[in-house]
Length: 211
Image (cartoon, rainbow, N blue to C red; front, side, top):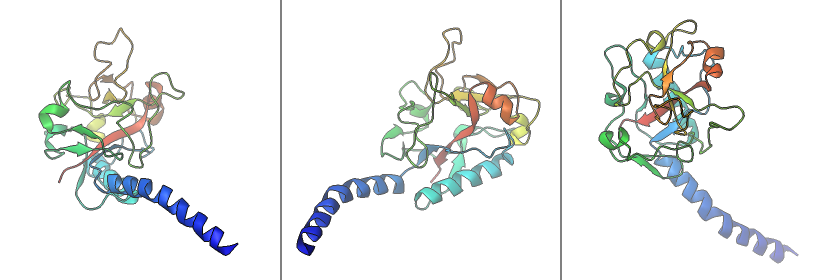
């Protein structure tokens, strides 16, 4: 009986281990993700420093080794595109979402619902799902520069105000020309958690490894 059990165990290892290694390797080299959880206080992220710290914590917990992680967020005097390094960037599955800054901010990027994965490789629900959580905080224009007045007090407010959001699933109503933008779809209705949820979000944001 023991030889049979050992043989079955060895066979199981042979079939499971390569996939596990591939997943581990992809997460080890991951350089882009959408936060799987927000900070729970609306758009009050503790400023850029608090948002960056959240990215770093999630990345390290997921097994991404080394590097400095930055939130893709603009603030007064700061453009999101200038915070995230030069690329290329890959998700938790090892897929490239963009090779450089120019491609990231062009129609040639590969940010979709299927590729904008969380740090653990999960998928964020989008338009048509329940709940819809496709609004991703950016505070940015389509070119990655600051969207004036749309950063909820540089990510320190959880009441009145607004934050520019993108749609990670690149989907929106036909009446919204910018609805397919990953980083500049529309402003939120407010800065509080309920306001973000009300426009189809949950306080998530993009994280990039800057080096």
